[in-house]
Amino acid sequence: MSGEVILVVLIIIGLIGRSPIISTAACILLIVKLISLDRFLPAIERRGLEIGLLCLTFSVLVPFASGRIQTKEIIGALTSWPGWIALIGGAIATYVNGKGLEMLKFDPQLIVGLVIGSILGIVFFRGIPVGPLMAAGITAILYKLLSLLSDRIS
Image (cartoon, rainbow, N blue to C red; front, side, top):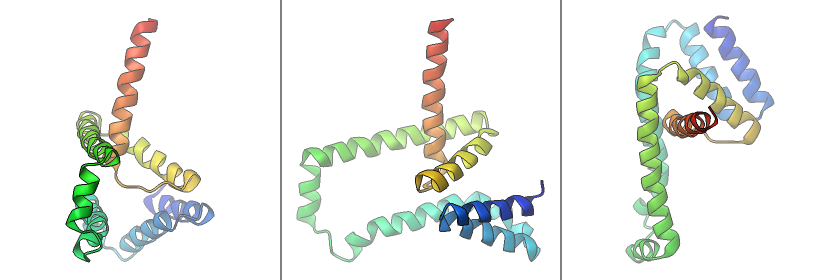
């Protein structure tokens, strides 16, 4: 199947699944291909994640920039048990992302499964694709757990 056909299928899946993010991304990539701007695809692939994370970080930091979150609220969040849980969660997430990056470097063809799994998660579970690193990190954890279980069973 050609790239264009796959993108059209993704547009249809996005429309059926009411996922404007998938539909929009597939439409933009299809336009890039159809107007012969294929030379930009490697740059989009290489920098797209960084640009997406930058936009996500912008949206998360807007309450700080707009003044809706004050210093006393920051201190309150960092001295409460939910705040500490959030700190631990953030640290664990970055660790898991690092393990995901290691796994992708070791086995880069896993990206196909991660992409398809992310699409399924977006369409059927209303998930939000925040990046392949977390998906790869979760995959690395699941892989390690299944390896340990299979070693015990054998």
